[in-house]
Length: 207
Image (cartoon, rainbow, N blue to C red):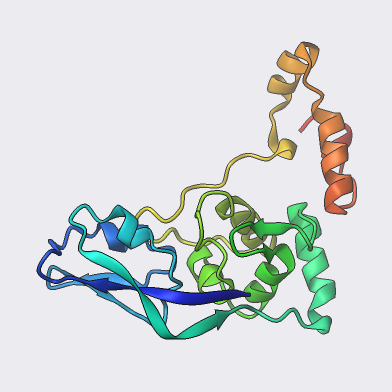
């Protein structure tokens, strides 16, 4: 669970309407209306991306009167489906998806099961991706994909395509580098053991 204690205030005199703040917000809480930035305080998760990247220094983080607690309860009856989706994504349910907020994979999947269908909606529900915003987008995309969801990319710079996993390395690449100290199949077997995922045909041979 994340405690949101800050929010951005906009200095309208400095704001030029460049939309940088809008493009970097991981929960789509900032919009430029009539060439001025506006902040939906209820959606804001206090990550300060808008403040840090504003070229005009028009945003300043201020303390909320009352902190907001953000998180999704992992209910016991969800666990069979959570384990199934995590196994499909080859991510252990207890794996920490977001180090900044300590959000685990099981909470991300719980948010997905409750209706979150994009990384932005997952971030809004769980708080994940509202810290450094660097590492957590890839496992979130993998978990959405494992749940059968192909999210439409939001306008802006919030996230990019999913990177390839060890299971998706082409056979030609494996053959080319297998004699140079790379142990692709051994790595895959170890990753599956850590993830608690059942072995696949891909783990025993070429992809």
